[in-house]
Image 1: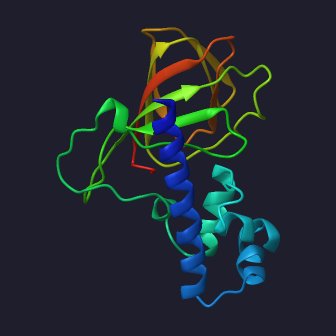
Image 2: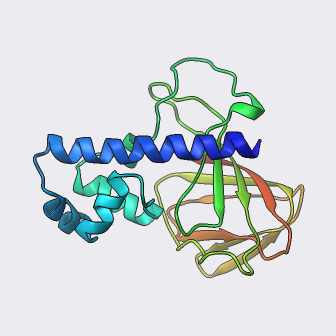
Length: 195
């Protein structure tokens, strides 16, 4: 499973870097111009394009905006229509500096309304810096399968244990973390799809 996880991450990162570079060239932007639009250095953007660095989710959104595409443009497209996603074949990825890994549980097809994910959260203690608060259109649902999951939604804090679930409007700034000392695993559904 770990080997498959590493393979999926490497594949996603490689595709992302190639896609960003091709979009930049298609738009006839220099590294300097694209980096200025995205709010990063040309050196960092060059590393991303060459798969030597992985942008945070916030930076990936900024790069997408700079290149005038949706952030989903950077992720591999799955086949359309009904599809079984086998446990050992899930596409899994993690953004640089994040202690959260996402596994896609569904396929992409036109006009889909939701995004089911299996989310693995490393313990916060000793982990890389926590993900920033974020907000996005739609709703979010989470159901804890293993460990403890802490959701910070606006000014509220919710600690969830196995079997607990939460549902909220994702327009409210939020973030999640693992306050325990063991990995947390939870099932998540987002609307609209993000990846």
